[in-house]
Image (cartoon, rainbow, N blue to C red; front, side):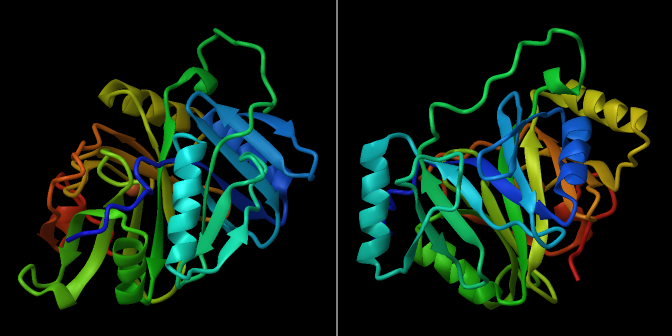
Length: 291
Ligand SMILES: [Fe+2]
């Protein structure tokens, strides 16, 4: 009998990115991904756009100290807290300045911190701007991905402990579960809010914004072109998730994805297995096989 984890539904609400020059990184994201910035009391920068928000702060370049998942209400938050503590996990105080103080955080085997909480209701506002710009382009922060040299333990944590629902795997041999190399997990009906790729080391992989449609993918690519930012991968269509995509790199070399048409999978649907090959990662062309 599979566990019915209370971490459903949960959506990626925000994440924090660190930099040795946080104002430079914040300016990059504001320009490239259409964010308005506001300073927070703790010295970090809150970037907000339509359906998207991230926090930029001081630290090691390219660090991503936590991923914040938004829950439905306080009852669900209490259920999640009791669930995590009932499993004997060491919950931690929330580092998020976006969530209310009672958010609960838990660290995975590679050290990534997931924070589950409810957003504060007093976040800074910005005046409406109806001129056409990146700030008016659709792009909801939707998923975050990590790379690991410890895939088996990471899959066990997200799948067996937290009860995230597996949507797809990629495997060297589709008939042999021991050869899995990638796992995509959902925490609501969207195909994945989190994924983990086997690689030579623990590192950030990418985060993604879900846009309205293919035309919005074009508009974002044209916007990147206007800034002389090259597409690093794509446009293409992923096999797992069936989403249209392209990626660019940020100032610290981290991949950021624009996505559309991400598959919707009800909670009851069983995971599928794809062969680990270029075509699975990009049905249209070259694949990015992690090293
Ligand atoms: Fe992605």
